[in-house]
Amino acid sequence: MTHGVNAGSGSSGPHANDRARRRPRRPRRAWALGMAATLVLAGAGWAAADRWFGGGDDDRLGSAATPGTASGEADRAARTFLDHWAAGRWAEAARLTDDPPTAETTLRSFTVGLEITEPTFTPGPARTAAAGAVTVPFGAAMPVAGLGAWNYDSALTLAKGDGGWIVKWQPALVHPKLGAEAKFRLTKGAAGAPAAKVLDRDGGVLSPADHPSLTPIFAAAGGGAGSGAGSVQLISRATGEVVSTEAEFGAVKPAPGGGPVATTIDPRLQRAADAAVAKHANGRLVGLVAVSIDKGEVLALANAPTTGMNRAFMGRYAPGSTMKVITTAALLSKGAVKPTDVVDCPKYLTVGKQFHNVETSEIRGATFREDFKHSCNTAFVSLRGKLGDDELSRFANDHFGIGQEWKTGIASFDGKVPLPVDETDKSAAMFGQGTVQANPLVMASATATAVSGTFRQPVVIKGQRPTAKGRDLPASVVADLRGLMRATVTDGSAKILADLPGDVGAKTGTAEVTETGPNNGWLVAYRGNVAIACLVEAGITGSGSAGPIVHDILSTTP
Image 1: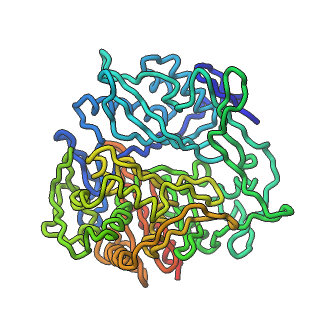
Image 2: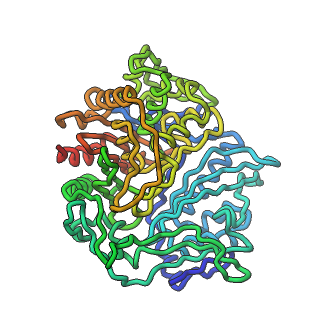
């Protein structure tokens, strides 16, 4: 089945009218905002949700552009446009452009025609362009119903008009290849394709009824909507021929002779994950992944709701302070800091913008260990000069595999740590803000790498040949990381895990998504041979929202 998408046309597939009425439930924005400190912008700060001490894992960061300035006003207009688009409010988005009729038709046609649900946009820092215009780049994660997410990068250009900043309409802002010469078409496998039997790591049969969170695997094996296979193709408007395939969603290939699909899922841990998410989600959106530290095998994955976007594998979120695990590894590896070094945690630190900790908290004379376990952002920002401008990006790629292509067996977004555009962006990246993007799969893998020293690319379908590689971390760095994460549990922001016996370590995070909306909650942790990462959208805090879920699951591990 194919669905054509023609920018500037109202045609968007055979069921366009029905789909147009089914708008996404609410916007899913992974804006470049973040966790344990607040960035004060031209004197206008953002109120903190948590106190910094006593479990305060809040890592809030304001917009990269300063309100009241040209770039700040344009940045706000760009985010409002993307907000409306994400929510399915195409008319409202179009009114912010210089060509509302064309913009509305194209946004509706593109989103509905390609069966995109709950799009997520991640704006980058606003940049001044020619003739006083401002450019705002953004990453797009477009979940295609029944298939997976299509990820790409684009940008908005805004100009100052009589009534304020407006988006200069052009089809290429929707996707860089959309325009007068080419459009997109969605192809999907025929419905009713036979489902392959799906097995757990021990050879037992997994069923959708017992494990609804494994919908992404069942769909890929032919047991979900359609066959789990399809593609987004770029089509020549002149000839109707396929120019290129922009995204491909392939069904899992069964064993020779039509045998079952063998997974790495641990049935016991999967049951625990299903139960914990069902118990503690409380109507919020959740993504969770657990991997084996020694092999990188995915032991459990869960999403709430169990249908729709596989946010555990395909989400694009600011990881906030959970990123400090990677930043710390980079600093320790080059001898830039030791846990016992004094790294002051002041109330304020200005790097282009003024950073401060929640409620302007401070720890004078703090050691780096205290900075880590209490998530002091100003301390991490102060260490930015210890890393070269490209060093954090290269380190995340070289040692943690982030940004490489992972072959897990199903579709996945494998993280992104871009080069910073300036010192402010570099400062934000030190604690997982700005344009850094990850999801529970990426952060579970990062946790496993940190505490083992070796990157093992995650897989969920047996028989994959991972192509992503990573260099080992020094043994001394691994020992220090484990010690810091352990201290976060015993005497820091992850005390919710303190009653679990054995060597348990963790890092919390609370990511600001909008100026006034609730924050996303993060928690990464390890116990025994299990590394886990949990994200709760609108979770307010990591310890409060993701903490109970992770606690319940790790309590079942040896």
